[in-house]
Structures are given as C-alpha cells and as structure tokens.
Image (tube, rainbow over all chains, first blue to last red; front, side, top):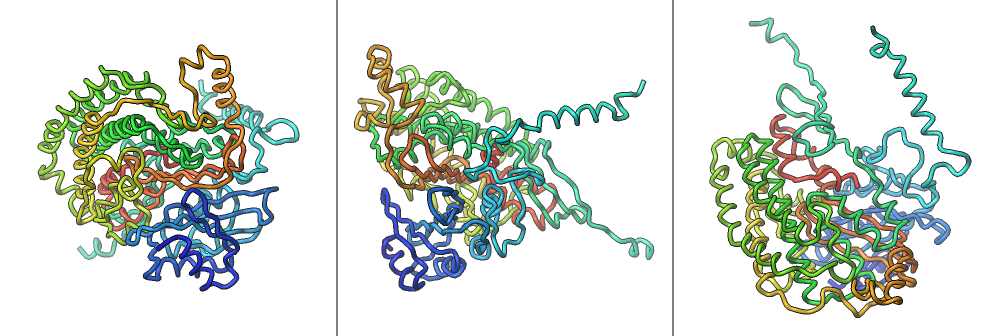
Length: 179
Length: 397
C-alpha cells in the first residue's frame, strides 16, 4: 500500500489524531498526537492491509526552542509481507508520559529504555524502565539540547576534584598501608 | 536418602562478564541459575558508551565519518558506507557507477572479514581452536588488502559523501581476484572441521530456537533473522549502491537455532565472495566521485592542491559543512554483517545534523538474548552470544 494511502486511512480511522503528513525523499512521515499511540500501533500491527510486523527503529528527538511540544518520539515501521514503510512522529510535551508499545513490538523494550535514558521521556506501561546506556546514578539526560556538553555552565566541573578525593580515600584503604 | 530429598535447592545469581572471554567485549549478563539451567538472564550494556549520537550533532557531515568507523570496529567499511548512503539520500546525491561498484566490493570484503572473525570466535567459544587459526589466516589477507587500498586495516574511513576517497589500483584488483579464487576452497576447509562435527552439532542443533514471528517481533535482523526462515535482507528489499546490478542469493534457515544461523552465515561468505568477483569483472571506468553536487561533495585532491578556490571549498566543507542543506528527515538502512544498520538523520538546514540516530543491530540482538538463553543451560549462553554476533562498540555507541 502507498504510504500516503496509509496516512489517509489513519486519518479517517482516528479522527483528529493526525496533525500533518510530511513527504521527503520518498519517505512519508505522519505527525500524530500522543494520546492514542498504543491503539494506532496495535491497529497498524494487526490490520491485514497494514501488517507492520517489524519496528525498525524508535527514537526520541528534542525540539527545544524550535517546536512547541518539546519532544517527538519517532517510530519507523516496515511490513515484511507487504514491503511498505511508514514513519510516525508522535509529539510529546515536556514532563508528560507516553504509552509504551512493548506489548505490540518487543523490540521497543530497549529502544524505549534508551529514549528514557537519553531524553527523560517516560513510557507508561513499560515493564522495566531503567537507564540503559548511562550509569544508574547519572544526573540529567544527555541527548537533550540543553544538556551541558562541556561540564556545568556555572563554574568548573566538579568531577575531577571528586576523582582526586576518591583516590586519596582509596589510598587510606588497608592494602596500601600494610608493611 | 530421605535427607538428600529434603535438601532444598536455591537459585543462584552469577555474573557473566563484563570481562569474560566469550562475551565479545564488555557485555555483562546477570544470570539467575537453578543448577545448570538459566532461569533469568538480564544483560547490562553501556560500558562502551561514547555518545556517538551526541558527538555527531556537533560535527559536520564529513567529520562524522571517522566516528562511524568506531561503531562496529571489525567491519568499519560497511558502517561508513551506510552513513554515506544515508547522507546522500538526505542531500539527494547520485553516485557514478564506478564508485557504486567499488563501494559494493569493499562492503562485501568487509562482510567476509567480519564473518570470519565471527566464525573464529564463535568456534573458539564452543571449543574448536583450529577454526580460529584458519579463519584468521584469511582475515589477514582481507585486512592487508584494506591496507593496500587506503592505508588502514581496521578504521578505514574510505568512503566519502558522493563517492570514495581514492581509486583502486590494478595491484589491488589482482590480489583481490586471487583471493576470490582461493576463498571457496578455504570455506570448504572450515566446513570439514565443524559442519558435521559431532561435538559441534550437540552444542548448536536445537539450541536457542526462536520462531520466525518472534524473531521479527524482537527486531532481529541479518543472519540472526534469516536463520529463522524470514527472507529479509536490506540489500534485496531496499537496494543501494550496486546491489541491484549483481546477482546473489539470500540464504534462509529453517529451524531458527544456533546451527541454522551458523549455516546462513557460512553461505553468506560464499555469496559475498561471488559479489566481490562480479564487481571486479564488471568494474566500469569513470570517476570515483560525483561532480553533480559540488555543494556537498569534496573536490578532487589534485584540484585542492593546485587550485585556490577548490582549497577554500574543501576547507569550508570540512570545517563548517555545506552552507545550505535541505530541511527534512530520512531513515536509511543498510545491511551490515550484523544486520540492519539504520541512520535516521534530521537536517535543519545548517551544516550539521540536528539529530542523528543510529539504529544498531547489536543493540537489538543483545536485547533478544534473554529470550534465547532462558530455559537453556549456562553453556548454551556462550553459544547464543556467538550466534547473534554482537559487537559491543556498536551496541553501546
């Protein structure tokens, strides 16, 4: 099925959910509201005409200062049987959760964990939403556009002194002082 | 006897990795075992996280190519090609035919090198030492060819946006042709060692079975998916470079166990060899870099050294990126030895990508590892890790 047709069907089936349909370089992206994403995902996965059985990619995007709903969660879908693709750009405002699609595609599990780790987007109904690439005790979400890339903006990076202090503490540990 | 029956068994949690010889890098698995059976398996990744996606946001499109080498560092050529193809789709650049053939050729060489390393380590994990030595013998020849081509063995940085860096020499073509002559016999040699080896069969047949529907649902790609009998190859479904001009077959497994995934990859070695052969035979003459889109592609090196304008153009293109770029977003996938490597690039019209997402196959494959391991033996965990062929540099990005 043509991607534009899929977008039309989505528009008629889920009234008021589709915000815009973008086409660029032969790829079609459908911008959606976030509220019914689980229903839409299930519809795309189960309906025989769509059969989007393979979630190629799921990622977040931070549009700080560019668009009003700050985040977007992007789903790239592919159907192995019908060989057609579609992209869903789902708008998520800051500090608001979005429904998880793990129950539809199991691939989404780690993708959503990464998205939470990197952007702080909370996925409701995710079985195990923890940080995945960053350490568990990390502060902040690195892929946000306002994340300081060269240390904190006010003053110097405390980390180095912290490392030095820790190494001094370790020197006091038993195995160094034994004679 | 009654006393023994009353003794209670307790589940035990053990750590496999991050420094374990068979986890192929820094992968940590927390296994909950009951005797020898794995009850629960939880992978922990991120030890090699370098923030490639964040780094790429602060770099121009050309500067990012060396970063892509370091994703899957044992087949860096395919990563570079995948990245360049994604950027070319974004900028709508068409390649000259010779560049397309050269890229296909080096990608398949890289696939052979990667599959040989997979075969070597996979067999070594299961206990076949000789295969390791045999496979590295041929891998060395490929790496030497890469050295002859671009001076580097592992992190090649050979493709460029709109073509490749330098042309192939006749000596390179001759040596590569000799390699393609010899290689099918070498594959037979590996297969005589393990294909019907009784220990190998006991360790691999019926281990880590995953059905076709489940494999698709878990997002497995590459030989890990095709071992379950799903005919999905990005080279066939979304042809890029010269893959629509060469003939090759996609090997499909049946049972979805470790052995079928092994057979698929072995057949892929043969097919890759055939593709390299066809590329050599069909290699047309012509330019290796497109001249149609000078806004985005580097000028030829001799012009850079002799012409002032070209030098300035070269300098600004590398340090600042293209002056204008189209607004838009593309998701472009390529078939790397591990599976589907996707790049999702959003351009906001400046010289740097607004967002660059890397969909790495290893990340997804590790996420499916609990499904493969749970219910099996501890020893099968090693076989499963080998059969999904993960590289942690790509997994953690």
